Picture (cartoon, rainbow, N blue to C red):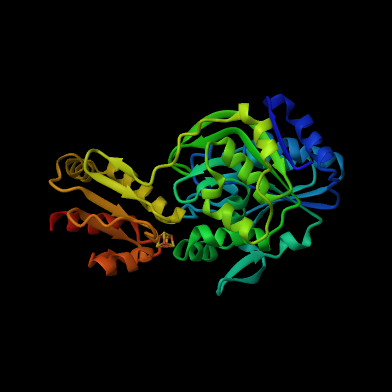
Length: 381
Ligand code: SF4
């Protein structure tokens, strides 16, 4: 078996998981580690997080095999972890119920020991637990992604590395570095949850799409190139999939498989490179990590709470004489709009700001309050 794909109903997931294990001739025993895709922020959206039902079907199958199951995740991305801690995320998403199904525990990878690996001269922390378990199942979500085009089995591995390592990825060539994760982290199998996927400006601002499929594979490149194709992307143009292929992580999907599943093409709305507020304010995430995205979300919340601030913002959004660009991330392919008001947020933008003589606000990430002050001062100028 090379790749598995099936349109499925929720009540059929038990047999789908059994078929996947049997088709790939895998027989998980002992301690099994599951890595879902958890956004780590409220609300827990269907298209953003691995669904409870998919995890439940896998867990039930593993319980029948007398496995000890560890569900682990790192990416608790909310800025203020005290307002949405790991356990709360599990209970709000209903995932905590999984522990009632058998020997199931949850591990906040932030509290685990790590090993260091060197990727292109940069040190990345990878949790040791994934080397210690008997079996590792990667359970990503099918999503579009404004910075990486798609988020599938390779991208899901990023939720295993430490917060600082993730920041390093975003500061230096996110897409190329992602390809290396497949060299250093090797799940035994990946099972992609495409029951409800995300399209458009994923992974955070996209919209849910009912796609009703489950896909699986034991070759990260093959599986991701296959599903990226079904989502309507040219997988060879998806830098991290291409990079993983170049590094020998796996092979691109075979043409015969593409032909076989041609009728399963889903017309996913592609992610944009910017979002617009009103007529004049443009938000450019470039390669920003979720922390700077969260700052933007926090700003939106504070604009709703503080009516005066909100009115000021929307006045500029509609009546500013110049276009206002709010720029985040490393700006690798960012065009410089010299006649606009450009506002650079966070340390990642430093080189772009320096190159074009733009002031930028320091921080990784800077606080929402500082960004609001900075923004209004720049607009006033
Ligand atoms: S500056 Fe922002 S985008 Fe860059 S690593 Fe820090 S938090 Fe992430």
